[in-house]
Image 1 (cartoon, protein in one colour):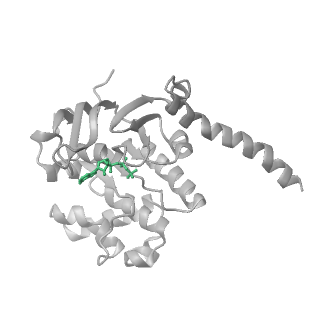
Image 2 (image 1 turned 90 degrees about the vertical axis):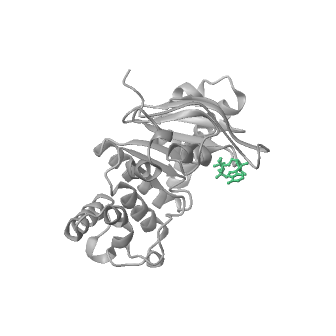
Image 3 (image 1 turned 135 degrees about the horizontal axis):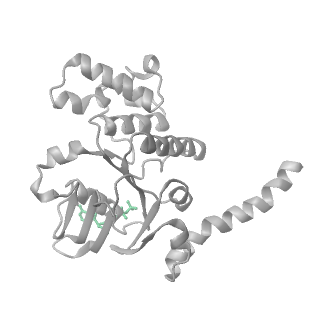
Length: 261
Ligand SMILES: Nc1ncnc2c1ncn2[C@@H]1O[C@H](COP(=O)(O)OP(=O)(O)OP(=O)(O)O)[C@@H](O)[C@H]1O
């Protein structure tokens, strides 16, 4: 098997002088080209786990490698340029235009203005936002879905191989959420990305991800493909995976009747 692009080995992280155990002895590998979803209840350690990979949070124990390198040996700023990060609420700079937000990393690396401008246009096309219409808008002049598209474009600006996403579509209405999820899955494929996405929505995880990691109380409770996890002997994991199917069956039974009425 090819070396994993991200590998957590027995990683631990506590806060408040050890009183809060956020991540507890987690070992997890993400293969090149894989789309991994992290699911789990509130406070189960998902965000902490994600942020340990790009050193927004530092590990207490264990080790993490990214593209084969121990993250502690890599300058955190350079590490974050190699790893795109999409925040839950977009995390856009409110005073910068769409173009300013998307071009911030190329600007920081000293790219020439014409190159930044061309890259911004390319990225707007990639996330399917009309250049002329959106380029100069400020974040508050966008819908939530459009803001998340800009967040994705910004994360891709430095051409990372890895993208980490913290509940990127959580605050959107179901149709927008579905469209963005599909679009991002297509970008993941087209650009050959390796993606790790936190989501609270098990249906979204099953539809988008190749593999799912389930967190609970800071521990990795299970990992596998959706069908592997649906066979899990862990009662919580099994229930989590079977609920979307049960809901789909209930909806399937209800909708045709409504449709025919
Ligand atoms: N900076 C911090 N200081 C103290 N405790 C923290 C800090 N960051 C996270 N925690 C605690 O660590 C635990 C894990 O938090 P984390 O944000 O990783 O969970 P999560 O699964 O992402 O939750 P949610 O789904 O609600 O975003 C929680 O108990 C949280 O309160």
